[in-house]
Every structure is written in C-alpha cells, then in structure tokens.
Image 1 (tube, helix red, strand yellow):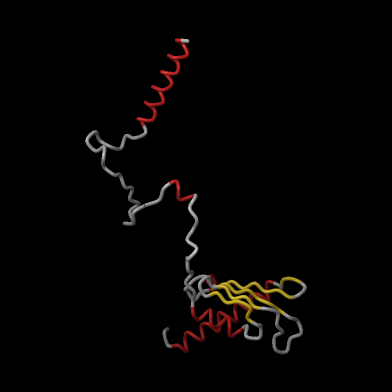
Image 2 (tube, rainbow, N blue to C red):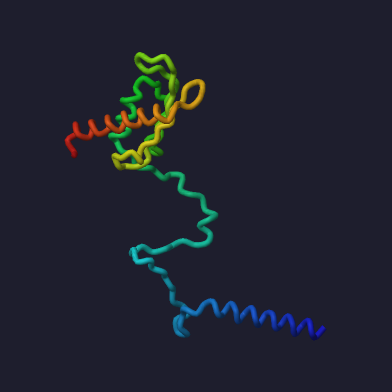
Length: 158
C-alpha cells in the first residue's frame, strides 16, 4: 500500500514539475502580467482554443465589383433572373434561350472580389442535358469581363 502511495506522490510531483517548466516566460515579480504575442503587423491576436468551436459570423458580407455585377446582368439578360444576393455576390438564373440560339442555358454567377479581374468572377453554366463545355463558359466570362471594362471606361473612373 505504501508503494502505491509513494508512486502516486512521485507521479504528481513529476507532473507538477513538468507543468511548471512550460511557463518560463514570466519573471518572478511578473505573475500578474499579461503576455501578448505580436507578429509585427501591429494587430493584437485575440484568439483562443475555443475559437474553433464558435460559429462564423452569419452576417459577413462580400464586397463585389459593381461593374462585374452590372455586366453579368447585361450579358446574360436573355436568362430569367431567379435570385440575386448582392451580400454574397451570387446571381442565379433560370433556363433561357440566347437570341438566335436553339439550346436553353442557365447560369450561376459569383462575383466575390471588388477587383475588376478575372479571379473576381466565376460563371457556372449548364444546359438541360448537363454542364456546358469549358470553352463556352470561358467565352461568357470573357464577354462579361469585356462589358465590365466598357462600363468602367464609360463611367470615367479609369
């Protein structure tokens, strides 16, 4: 019985010593001081281990480029708009036929950045039989980007 008790006492003492060795950054007189890590960018790091369990803010807005947004609606004006969410940057259309075309298309457009660049625009198109070719989707993206540049030049803020 005494061997078990002494082994338990030795285990607790070892655990306390190991735990005490982890906090070597504070001096003996600084027991109430707060240690802040600074990454050099001037911003304080206020995160903790519990941030993993928190839900992300549901009210987060995405900044969208107004020229890409308007150009998307103009270029795909032959498609009926089903939903528009300017806070997340998503435009969803229904099936529609382009002027002079026979196939019906639908599109989902994502404008996810305020820059007038190709990385700010994502277009997903499909027909009733499945997704369109990569070349067709790329041509629509190029048309939207070209129209957005025209709108920006016409706005006079170049």
